[in-house]
Length: 329
Image (cartoon, rainbow, N blue to C red; front, side, top):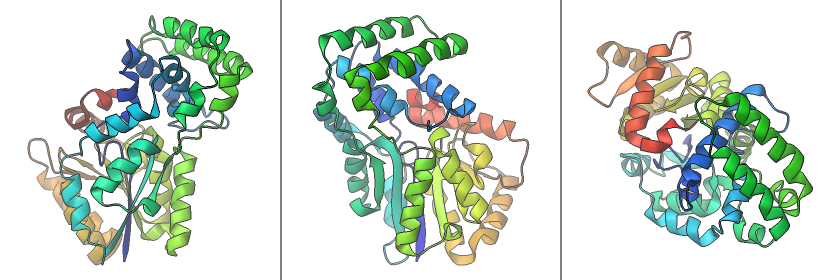
């Protein structure tokens, strides 16, 4: 039996669900882009008790302020599309030879719908519990003034040019002022499955299946995945970066840039047949011939230090596949 674990957003579905949720109110996309950049900044500084992907907790005040509901999340989930080739790839990994898992930062209302569509068993999915409607009940009129004000501040910031301003203003809001409110106390209970929490979830699956990390394949693409990619690569497993950004690529064993994730099938078949050494040989051979147009670009990353050109290639194809969501960390 072989074991593979996918991130959801990117590898299996091109949408960023939280981004789509924020678009349901005016200028929500702008607010999300700035908070997503703030998430990158907090992760890079190594803030204590903060994990990449905690954006999903940070946006709660704005979802509550604009009366976004769990029903809205469910509606978006029904409209979500799959990454090209995802259904074919998962279907090809027959239950007699592969067990498929998904560990995702996204909210459970979205994750459960997409993974069910793909036929991934519910017990093989780890995602972020999110009782949004309960949070809405905690917002009093006095507390509402605070997110209203910071929202106005955010709308004059640039997610690409105002790192210092973003850090100062949002540090003050999220870590000094918001925790003093009732809503702030409730939000602390939201623990998105990103960073170390993804690694912890994989270890739980690893222990329950009796398979060490060296026997696993993981597929990720963003800042929330770099720790799980690193853990599996260092254990001797296969960590695959798919249409990944600069935060994920340096920690992967290998990468694929393609508009179709089904291009991974031949790699997984080789892993099944001859393990990591066989995959390395295949990928290095593919590096020499290169991909075609917008697919089939494989790179072996385990011993590479200069990956600037690979990052640029992934950035281009990531934007093709994920459109607006492709620019997020």
